[in-house]
Image 1 (cartoon, rainbow, N blue to C red):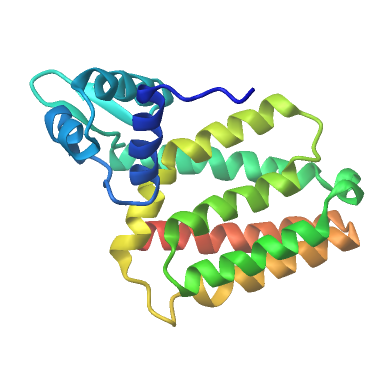
Image 2: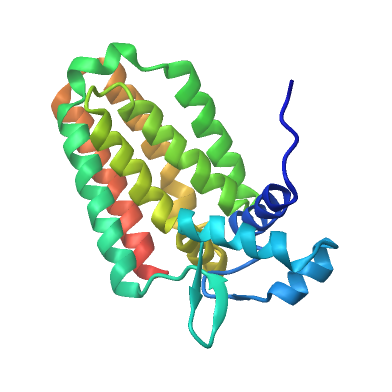
Length: 217
């Protein structure tokens, strides 16, 4: 029998969706009274939901400020970005022996989805699909602890990545729009060949585009 979610779980999912869809921006205050009225529930499940989201790192509570969507400082954000790039570089450098296990049809479909999400400015879905794309590739690597840490680091900065992309108002000539899908295609082709040097070159090129885009936002 399917478990019926508690009111706190329903509220938590609603707030989480609003955060991930960009309705709430990083650093935005969350008022318990307002949420209670909007969701037509008592304050107790709202507080419980916020507490659970805090344990996930999506929201935080500060003295004399109250609840707000989690916000990293610029320095913290780029430190997490650096960690993410270093892990991906290491994995790209050691992935060749495992490329036969990659589901190429799946990652090609993901890349097509990302191209659509970029064109339609669905940045939350774009970044979610992008992280899945890379995890689908690197997921064949046997060190699962390293993969879990990469996923945690990517999740820690996903909100601000969405916010930064939304604020940039990308035009049709943006490198992120022009080059990202093609660079993913190059990565896929290199993986299919199993040439370690070509794989690494394709990932390095893509990482440069991402870094330049992040610093320019």
